[in-house]
Length: 103
Image 1 (cartoon, rainbow, N blue to C red):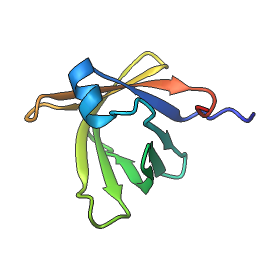
Image 2 (image 1 turned 45 degrees about the horizontal axis):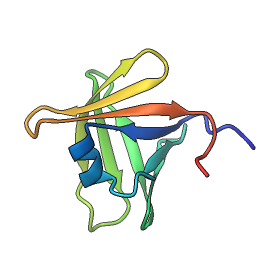
Image 3 (image 1 turned 45 degrees about the vertical axis):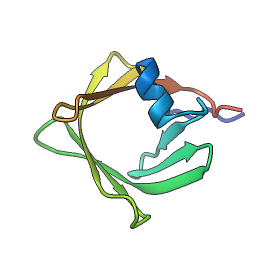
């Protein structure tokens, strides 16, 4: 199996995790070419990601027009954990790096 060097699994507070990932199977694959795949129990959503050049901000733009663009502050805790934060909404989402796609 080829490693998924940019795949990440959501790790959140239990209530928020149940709301955003009820099946516990959601993960994202962030590609080097700024495309992302958001895998959920309903299927996958495609889009583009971009990190701002002057501040620690992440833009998530979905190809599906029914989804609105998403804007997050982004932080890293070492090489294994990525943290997305929306202060106004009180959201903090942590992603752990995966080295292989989940089964």
